[in-house]
Length: 197
View 1 (cartoon, rainbow, N blue to C red):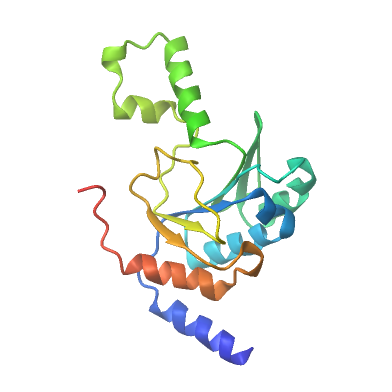
View 2: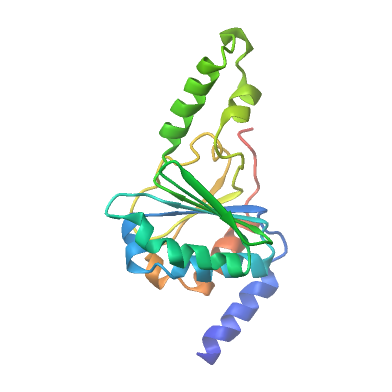
């Protein structure tokens, strides 16, 4: 245990350049298996100084998400938490922003965006990237996307994450420890971001 803490301390000392915004992509099984883990990981992020943390939960193998809401609402004790599921959004707490999105895919978001532009009678000739971005439900672009376990990425934030850095961990969400989180941050700071150039 002492060796493990020393290793965490060494990793934290190596961190000089952190992402402003971080997204974790989880499965329904991840939430079912360890519903308290989101609160723990959100705490790590905020203590490191990350400004925005996003958790996307795929609804495959999830069942009724409402039974997990008390775990997610507890994050409001140390952060401003926004929880979106179905057509519901609730906000509570103060501090750094933590967003939890249950079930909405990136394709769903883009379809809603196009429908809203049509309802607003937007001239097709006026549609450009900035117009689309102004209609998106989620107006944040994660610097780093972390995926745990062996499953593939979802299409959540498919527009916003086009230039995001990706980190894949073989460790399952339930066993995801702070050292693995710090490794992801260390890996991020070694990359030269090109933003598609």
